[in-house]
Length: 80
Image 1 (cartoon, rainbow, N blue to C red):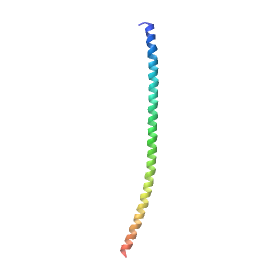
Image 2 (image 1 turned 120 degrees about the vertical axis):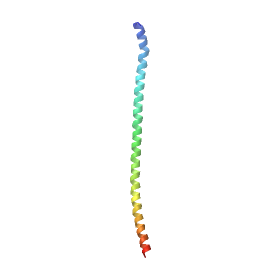
Image 3 (image 1 turned 90 degrees about the horizontal axis):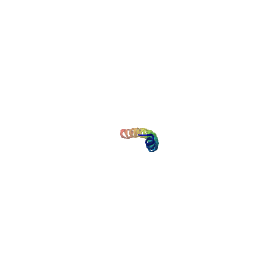
Image 4 (image 1 turned 30 degrees about the horizontal axis):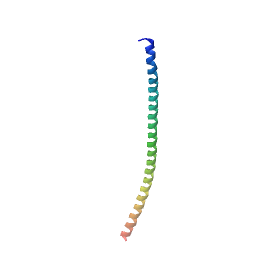
């Protein structure tokens, strides 16, 4: 191979390698951004579910208290 053949081959090879390098970088960046968005969505969902669980616990406590009061009233009525 002589120098002319190497230069002709490099004229084609270098742009292809540069294109592949940029494509790989964009793919990595896209994947990173996609995973970050997915993680943020899961975090927001987890926080929302945590708030719902807290509300449900408060509601269950209130219902248990009301239930205890009603049982006391029923016992009082039955004991008369």
